[in-house]
Image 1 (cartoon, one colour):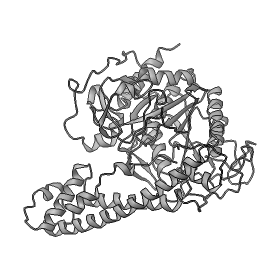
Image 2 (cartoon, one colour):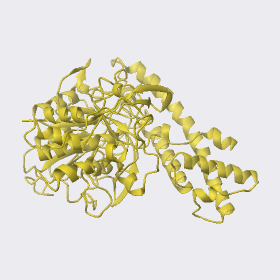
Image 3 (cartoon, helix red, strand yellow):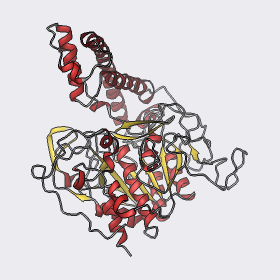
Image 4 (cartoon, helix red, strand yellow):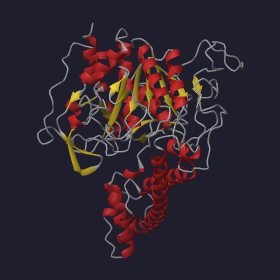
Length: 535
């Protein structure tokens, strides 16, 4: 499934609280030794920094971004380079968004809306990509589909049954908890409006409250707790908890529901040769289907046009492939979408999705190998389970028992804005063998449907940052192979020997270098310098 945006386990709430109250410059490669002697960003980020922190530079700004702005200022300097097609395998994408409409790929060999496969690629009217889901939106998780199909021959069937039972019970309990919290936050907000005399009261207004009334004091404590966890207003708190409740209900009603079936395309999901299903409408089916639009904006939102966000890459076209539902994606859709991207000219593919069960993982692995054989970079999000994925399965992958089948696959973990011990996003997966590099993924500002913008977080947001760097390299240095582009990104990253908290668990502290293959954070400035020196 698409990796959760701001995963619920890290939202901010505890019911117990409320019940009681190109150039010639040299690469920056010297490791930053530890958080005690390195510069830390001690002042709060400005609004501009919050919206652009992933593009800033650790050396210049003391913020662990990817040095994208520095790359444009000192290396690219307005040079467009060669146009690069980047395929975004995700949920639907708002291809009419004001910040994306000029960077959407168009299949020039297809005549729009004539009901014919003009270019003979097997897909009718695929003008901007393909929608492998048809009209579907909600879906089961993969292991729930396994139970529903009574696939007892699968060696993980008993594991799936036990997991579904425990997860359903957990989320049912969480629903009750969040419903209670939601009512308490609503009540606290009403109390604070009366206490401050303001509908839009501020943190300062709340802190200035001196009432001895127990209800007011409890409401004040709730608000202060919200503010201390990065929530800027009680209105935002209500919005986030309401969205969390909606997500929980979807999980119970669809993702974990054995009796639900979301597939509408009438194809055989176990037959890879049964193709041509779906349609050419790559847009989102509802406004809340925003994941793909957000990912596309991180890669390619039109730069310096006076609108909401700047993408990493300045000369790309986004090929939209709607594959990821509100639930787990199908292996068949993923495999065919990768092959579609390769066959129709993409040079970089971004996959911000993943799951822990994959009955046809070989199909997807073969497709990744197909991309490698055809010189296409595949960038994949590491996942938001706080797991060491050297030990816990996470699909898609590019290896069997750590033996890689391709040389084009980059798996990306997530960073927060604050350099130091809490630099790794609490939700981010990691792995010395199975994660390649880290990049900004917490609270990333980008495009959302209907000409809007928002902050979202997850390794889903880290992967497209790296895909953007890959596209920049392929644009400025088009003679480099996919394997070389991957190696440049890993080798040119900023190495850190800082010790960091892992999985949001303060008792679990590891050297940052042990969390990925490279031990580095992606750096566009360094990458372009290194790429320029490869013959």
